[in-house]
Image 1: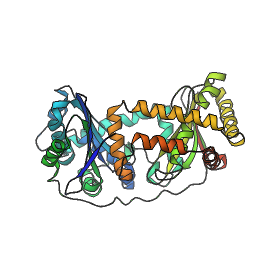
Image 2: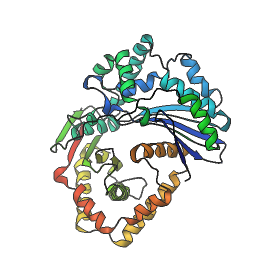
Image 3: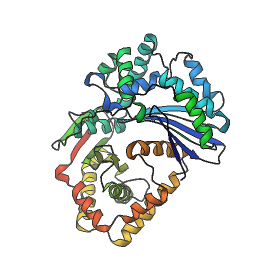
Image 4: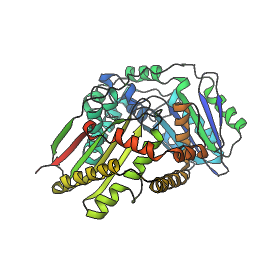
Length: 409
């Protein structure tokens, strides 16, 4: 896909992706997330994402929320362990309005004390709601096992104790020290010329003071495997197992993405879904996921099932892993897996807001954006020998940790 990048004097990059659609999509992506928080400030990055919608130097909450919604646009935001993202989808005429609002909420929020205290209650409710969903909570608890002692193990929402203790000073210090201008990308996909986008971007972002630099992040260490069983008052067993693995920059990243998609990824035809759910009717949800991060990665398998079926599910998963090791993929099987993965990626291009966010993230992660042809070529270049090497390195159960939520009366 065609794109252009323009860098403002303060280091903020403007990503321009032309599209003939009447609908445009934009995001502002900041390379700062929960891994950048101090120990006593867990949940701060996510808390800031909430508060930027509350009050700015010239708008109250209602004015912020209505600025785009009043013209039918959609405005939202999210926080990950490495990023904060604000994004919007809107009709073509409202680009200026959208970028002006991005400027206002990201760089001119005032964080009044009354809003801070009120939003603490909202986030505490969010934490409670999250903990009531074991299929969600187990993911964070499992990552805490994998990365115990490191920021990656933290829940993005924080804890009731840390959120209750957050202050306006914490917020302002985090933004000052972590919202680096050279680590910010403003991306727009729409029917605009590069000249028009740059003109509007210059109007709203050129005067932001330069704050370039790198966020110094402790590199995660590899912990010894740990196996935990936690009794909970829930109706089903929930289980996760997996390990730390390849980062965004590892040469086997593409191969593991392909293997994960084949083994337990998107679609009903994955190995785990066919061999555990469809063949034996054991688990309603069974899947694997590979999440590459800047300096590490996570490969994990999740399933939820009746308590009496959990051991059988684990046995079947181990059986499929053993097959991968003892019976390597044939060239025909690999080709089918590549075709499936390529097709899913191509269809994913239709999610335009997801596309522009992914492109902005790629610009931060790699300082470039691969074309679809390049992405597909990388997938095609994965060999059966590569896949076997990845299986042997990643699917080493001796290095895996596990977490089981066990139902109790």
